[in-house]
Picture 1 (tube, rainbow, N blue to C red):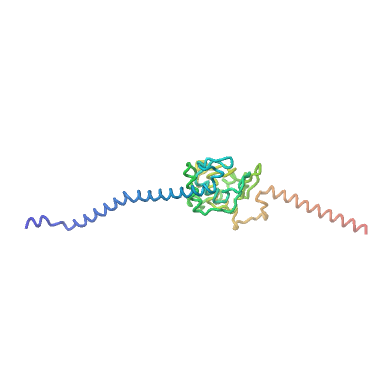
Picture 2 (picture 1 turned 30 degrees about the horizontal axis):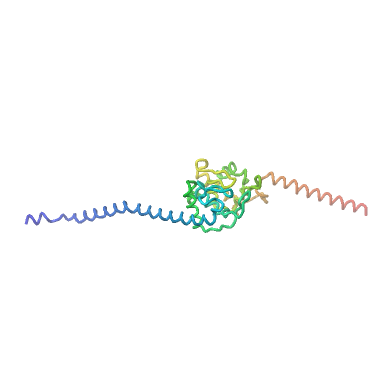
Length: 269
């Protein structure tokens, strides 16, 4: 009878065994699940690069070289990063129709999935600016007033103070920012396309970029009041004053000449 009582298990023994089993299962999951997820991500990235290389060979290699090293018809893409590809291809500037002083924005020829694949391949050629996440260019909580100040100090020299764009030298120009998506505005500041300087986070932090995007959206919105009437390209009071002098004074002179001519005729009659 003593031996039988010695072999009898404690009532909590089953609970302890169950907890140990669950702990072991959790430990195994923690040990293997991240590795499995990482491997799946790596495989997906490899497939994206492979598909992107195929697209690149057909649509880009003739100008930028088979390995992105660049040619006389196109610059090197090594180190430009996925953000540059997303901007250039996502706005239709690339593939370019023909060489020129500046590649204009046009209809997009690739789907977003294809753009992502191209970006993955080009990014594999060398480290560069990464395509931003939506949280980076979201204008929620942005300071529009601060964005206007930053824009006037860093961008208005070329794009003018409302982002209407302007002419540069040798056939180049600063394009209008009206209707440009927040993502592409952010990428333009990241990468500095064509004649534009780049503003990396070390020069212009993410918060300041968001403020600028909020300002550009605000001044180009249909809901924004313009108490001055015609914007005249958004060039400011100098152009508006010049318009007033030329056309206003010209109209007064024309009226004066007309009155004088008709007065002379009335006297002769």
